[in-house]
Length: 113
Length: 112
Image (cartoon, rainbow over the protein chains, first blue to last red):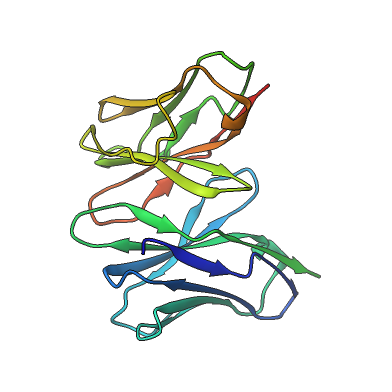
């Protein structure tokens, strides 16, 4: 019940296209959903996050869509650029003062020119 | 702010040797996390501390692994004795209550 399932495992998108990464969770106690971006040789870095009281959050070219009833959320990268090539992790966390984050398995995105 | 600092960045050792990884969290953060990342298992939480006290060590693989946080600005993860299957990238992360985690650059460990 603690799992966060992420797909696809890898993704190749042409420059200018839309990259879409999907995640699903089972634990309804999760109430905070961050996405992390990791470049080779670096640690994961927070990209964007959403709480389940909203269905969408947009920051620049990055948008999270959230479907509470389906327990699914996704990351959309609009106008994908070669510099977006990285591994993306979705994650989920429960509130209540506990900081333990459950991570998805990661999606390796490659944006080709 | 310098961010989370980890040392060493790379470590190559032989099977059976003791390995100590070090972490300095961001000043003012009261949570510290140790993760391990491999291709096969992804990003795994090993242990985390709150106010220097271990809260959850259920992810520590076995007794060969131990972690300490003697003060708010320093933590260690020790593997003794090390084995080839411990080869991975080990990340330290820190956060303040109810806020996001910030990861260090990681220590790439290779056990021969």
